[in-house]
Image 1 (cartoon, rainbow, N blue to C red):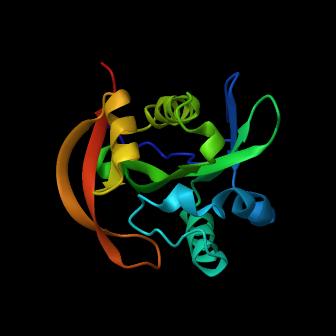
Image 2: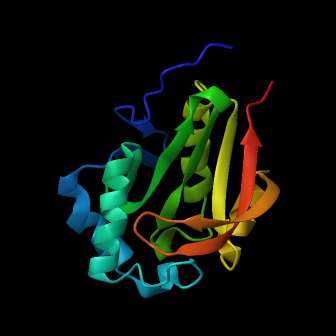
Image 3: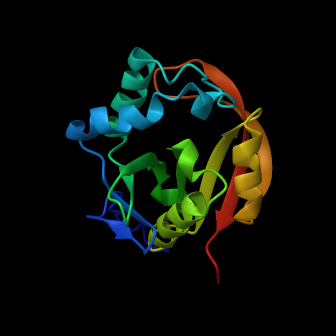
Amino acid sequence: MPIVSANLQPIHLQNELVQLTPLSAADFEELYAVASDPLIWEQHPNPDRYQHAVFSNYFDGAMASKGAFLIKNAITDEAIGSSRFYDHKPDLQEIKIGYTFFSRACWGKPYNSQVKHLMLAHAFTFVDRVVFHVGASNFRSQRAMEKLSAIKTGEEEVAYFGEASRWNFVYEIRKPQ
């Protein structure tokens, strides 16, 4: 199979609930206003990401990835979170989706699944396999992976951008045949 060049940040991905636009430096304050809630990060491997300096590192990694999105509510145009494509391996037909977070107002609602469905549909235009790293103590995200029918394939230590390594579960979703 030929290696396909991927556009990790299409102009936008959108449905009736969410819109994803390429993250830009100008989005920092708007996104930090969402991320500054400590409860968002309480189960995350890096629970201090609500702090300005720590979030700034997260944001730098998002910008460096060239695959990050600002997620907005499609109805209100309000920022509600972020996610990204990263670690694209064209030779393995693989990419990762992660670094996802949402405002607490989105929890228990279909925002995460709608975002993931948009990102998966886009990813499957150029890869056959999408991988997710989920913190070993992030039970909320583990349940979200199960709801997406992702399969847990392993466990490994993962070093997030500019942060210490943490134990993560590895999930995958394969392109439908």
